[in-house]
Length: 349
Image 1 (tube, rainbow, N blue to C red):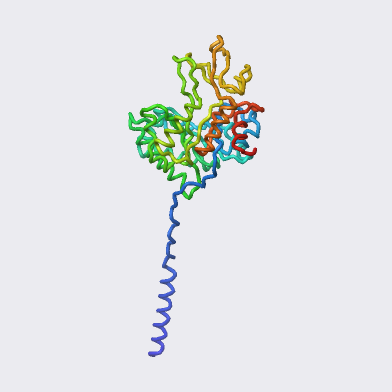
Image 2 (cartoon, rainbow, N blue to C red):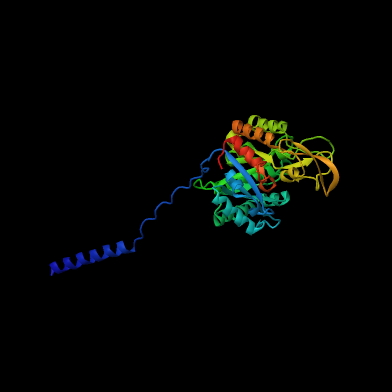
C-alpha cells in the first residue's frame, strides 16, 4: 500500500514539474543597444542640386557621374507641417538616374522660414516632421536629407529650436550609422542673427554643410560680383578658422548662374549656359547681356571656368567638397563648370 502511495506521489510531482515548465514563458532576450553614429565619410563631396522644375532627361548622364551626391530640390514643408514632394515624377527620374550613375541621393527640404519656425517650436511639431522625413528616406530608398531652412535666427529664438531639430533628426538619421544629414547654410560674411544661429553644437550633428557662398549682390552698387574669390576667402576663413568648423564638414557652394549689380535682380539673373549662349566667354567672369526683364544691355557677373577651377582647388586643399547650384544651369558641353571642377580635382567620370 505504502509502495503504491509513493508511486502516486512521484507521478504527481512529475506532472506538476511538467506543467510548470509548460506554463513558464521563455526569457525575453535583451534588445540590441541603439547605436547613434554618423555613416562613413566617403571623402571629398561633389554635390549637385537638381530642382524639381528641370527636365532630368535634358541633363546628360555624365553630369550625374561627375557628382557623387545629388540633392533633389525640393521637398517642401508647408504651413500645415506636411512634407510635400515637388514634381514626384521628376523626383523618381532623378533618383533612378543618380543611382544608375553611382551618386548618392539626398532629399533637400525647403519652405517658408515662418513654417519652419512654427514646426520646430514644439517637440510635437519636430517629432511629426522627423517622422515624415524618415518615412520618405525609407520609402524612396535615398541616402539622407539636406535641410535648407533659410534662415533660423537668433532674434526670434529659432536658433535654439533649429539646434534641437537637427539634434533630434541626427539621432534618427544616424541610428546604426545609416543615413546622412546635411544643411545648407549662409555664407557667413555678414554679422547678424542668421549667421549666429549656426551654433558650434551643430558641428556634432550634421555630416556636412553646403555653404552658399554666392548671392552677395547689391541693387544699388554697380560693379559688384556676387561670388568672387574674395567672398570665398572671407567665408572659408570665418567658418573654418573663426568658428572652427571641422574641415571635413565644409562644402564650398558654387553658382552656375550670374547676377547683375546696381539694378533689380528680378528677371535679370541668367544661367551660366544662357550667358554663354549670348556670347559670354567661359573664360571670363562678366559679360554684356540682355533679357526681356531688362532689354537694355547690362553687365552680368558669373563664375567662368578659370574661377571655378581656383575654387575647386582651394576646396580640395582646405575643405572637403564643392556644391553646385544647380545642374540644369550649367553648360553640357566642353564649357561645363562641373567638368572644369572635376578635371581640376582629378575626379574620373
